[in-house]
Image (cartoon, rainbow, N blue to C red; front, side, top):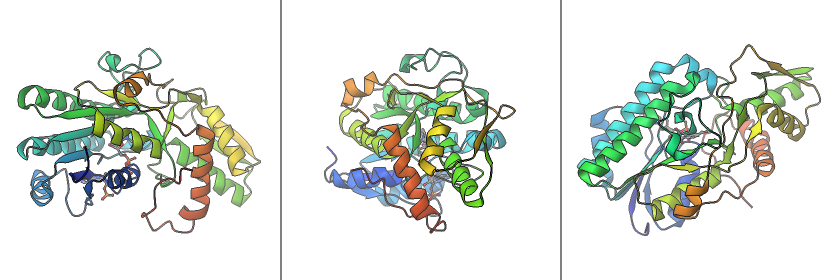
Length: 323
Ligand SMILES: NC(=O)c1ccc[n+]([C@@H]2O[C@H](COP(=O)([O-])OP(=O)(O)OC[C@H]3O[C@@H](n4cnc5c(N)ncnc54)[C@H](OP(=O)(O)O)[C@@H]3O)[C@@H](O)[C@H]2O)c1
């Protein structure tokens, strides 16, 4: 389906995008992955200029303003505006430029705070998201509204995927905006090097999360692009959850840090549990994640030790390294 298609990947130079782009090229697509500095998707004129230049057959919209709990707490307005505007502009351009297929990437943060576990796609509208990430999650929910409305009124073939938390080589290790896995790896590596006796972990440690290896996520997105054409949103995950305490203990072992882990319950836990029902992705387009958490974490730690410390200035890292 993707052979010789002109495929625009917004956010194609981001953490997930750097894995999606090579997978699309392998599938035979002609891929465009412009940077924000060339085409700012918050600006409608910039989006039109981009579509005029690319004339895409397929659009995979990955561009977003994202970060961990701290970043969400400090930037609720910015996260709402940037993510909503990018989505509105990109989907509207897909309509006006008669794009054949549009793939929108939402997030597990869009789910209600209180919802049965595992999260089923049908539950998405059954409540308000967890407060720490609600503006980001709701901006992403609006993309689903737009996709379904445009499908109904304009017959735009827009699909919507809901990935769980991602991790892997090439993740964002920035102190201010990183998610939990890179944040912990960085703290543990730095504490080990400095000989510190303890590492602080945000929250009680009792919250649970599900993590999807970035290269598996890319595979799921490309499979959905090729095989899924319906309006209902679809979860992308592994179906396995782990507490933050167990995650921190695993990373401590992988990093080889011998000090203590000290949990700080004055910091937010975020949503208490996160785990997706992943049956629809397998049923609808045959996606099953194949990288187990221990393997993925080991690769991420190795990547951080080998690449990120040496080349912090260079964001151009290759995708994953799956065996
Ligand atoms: N990371 C996760 O755990 C996770 C989990 C679930 C869903 N997701 C979703 O997956 C997608 C990719 O996330 P990611 O982790 O790969 O994020 P990322 O590494 O931060 O990449 C985001 C990309 O968006 C681009 N971008 C941001 N603002 C833009 C703007 N105004 N105009 C044009 N481009 C802009 C950036 O372009 P430049 O590089 O040129 O600045 C960057 O390449 C997002 O939609 C996110 O919501 C991520």
